[in-house]
Amino acid sequence: MCGIIGVLGQLEAAPRILDALKRLEYRGYDSAGLTTLLNGKPIRRRAVGKLGELIKLVARDPAPGTAGIGHTRWATHGAPNVANAHPHAAGPVHKVHNGIIENFRELRAGLEAEGVACQTETDTEVVAQLVAQAMAGGMGPAEAVAATLPRLEGAFALAFLFENEPDLMIAARHGSPLAIGWGEDEMFVGSDALALSPMTSRITYLEEGDWAVVTRSGAEIFDREGH
Ligand code: GLU
Image 1: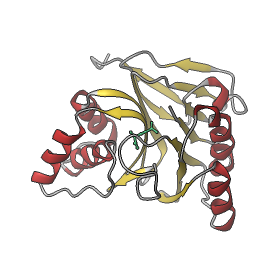
Image 2: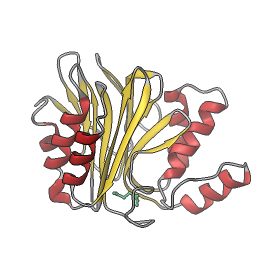
Image 3: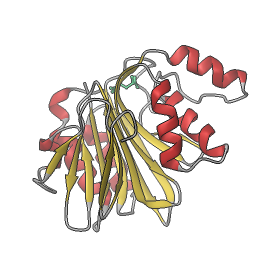
């Protein structure tokens, strides 16, 4: 199992993401990455090996911005290399994932039949591609995620950021734990309370099948029926 962190903050996101990822190291991982948004545009840094490699990379080549998502990956599908490391990107969609998408082969074949080429060897990139495809068809980010989640089989925790949406993060839990953290005009998403502990102790654990639309001022949490 690996780790997820998401930050919609008032301070620089990358140092907070790296600190949270350190707190999730106990889960094991083989690579790590983060994407921040600066003026709505994504900045992605990924590295293989220990978190120290990502920390060095970000020190050399900073990832500014107050919104970001980060991930430690334990590869299940596809080699532990930079190309397969999360966050994954497709169009305006940036995404991290814990777990396994069991029906990724069918989903990938469907995307390929429609001319969408996946960039990684992972099971998980299909999620970013499906959400991007739904958005290209005219849906907004939340509608596109809501339309994609019922198509996914397996165990997953997901966190999304969207280009040109610096005050939006979407999170989903299906078989893999995920918590929302509440701050002062800041909101967070994380695999566990430990990851969020330096930023907040006010935590809501998503229940099985829940997904959440998060902004700096709060979160709206939906169950799988959309209530
Ligand atoms: N199955 C995904 C991958 O191989 C995510 C693995 C994880 O939970 O880190 O990239």
